[in-house]
Amino acid sequence: MKAQIIETVEQYDKIIIHRHVRPDPDALGSQGGLAYLLKERYPTKNIYVVGDEEPSLTFILEMDDVKEEDYNGALIIICDTANVERISDERYTLGEKIIKIDHHPNEDPYGDIIWVDTTASSVSEMIYELFEEWHVQKGMEMTVNAARCLFAGIVGDTGRFRYPNTTERTFRYASELIKQPFLPTELYEPLERKSLQDARLEGYILNNFKFLENGVGVVNLTQSILQEYGVTPSDASRLVNTFANVEGLKAWVFFVEEPDLLIRVRLRSKGPTINGLAQKFNGGGHPLAAGASIHSWEEAEVILAGLQEICQNY
Image (cartoon, rainbow, N blue to C red; front, side, top):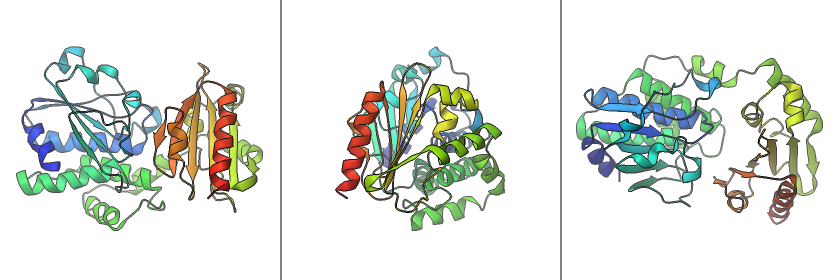
């Protein structure tokens, strides 16, 4: 599959790289890492990165201004996006061919070429693996910017190498990446930085989350609460692990209300498999980290009941 991706990339002069909406460090890290590698190896090709900006993560990567006509005859590569509903910038359909590179379960096998590896800690890890193949086949060289992006993505999706998805190859790839002249500490600080509003909302969450039977935790963050603390839904969603270390906790859910009455669902687990529950609500993700979107607090109660049942049977 990696050889097929390399061969396909070499056939196109325009390559536009997408990722999922509301990007996290791995979405941006894999997108940017791949873009920088391609720009170095193929300086005559037009390589673009597109998607909604996340102001708190522009230190990893900023998006390009891409016009609709740029999609004519372009190769589209979509990183870290399990299903088409979550692809940022719907113009990806205007390209000529689509490559999907992802580490979530392949529930929505879109694209002409699909490379999915659910054993990878992150798509950034997969891009490094792709680089190794490219290096052997075509002499591709690592760059500082590419290494910085990929390292940020790996750090983000492994919780700084603390999550169970961290493997021997994760450490090996990370050790190769930090041979480039960038300082990992310059990534850690902005990745963990909190505004005063975030810190105060974190205090609210710790004081108000509910610890239910069967080891389930839940917090409801309504629009009125977010407005009171002056934070956005994206800011609030990043606090999903605020009470993750509470003793006896098996799984937990954040319900974060958007201004348009949409409610984001953030599911996390220490063991019970939760992505099946997310899939029932047009979501998905990993066995221990998943998400969905719903349109009422009644649906939230159904999800919470489902999570309690999962933990009870675990």
